[in-house]
Image (tube, rainbow, N blue to C red; front, side, top):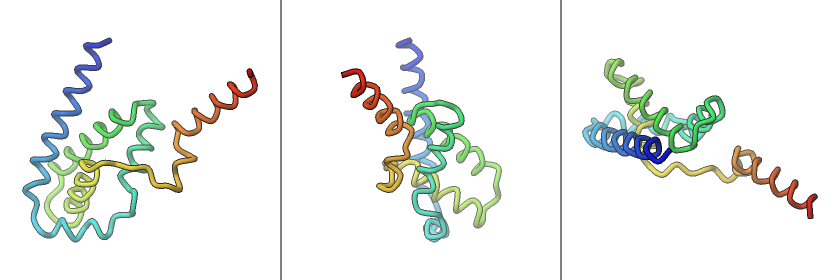
Length: 122
């Protein structure tokens, strides 16, 4: 089991390093694209992957980053690519749960269920 965790950690570090080098060399047009992206878009995408795949938050983030990097390679320059670059920058930053989504987050729901069970057992 430890070997699997080490592989996952190595995969996350590799993806993050690749992402950092990919996004460090962007043109100025990609800076404008972040204005057109819905706030918390990357958080919502990661949560959707997490919900559908039952992956951890970190592994869901790796999956999203991997797909975005792959799409970036296949798309020509322009608006779509600059939006992907902006999403990659968001994914590479610290993804935080928006305050209005905390109560609906999967971890929060599991925690509330566990607390309810414990309070009834006491």
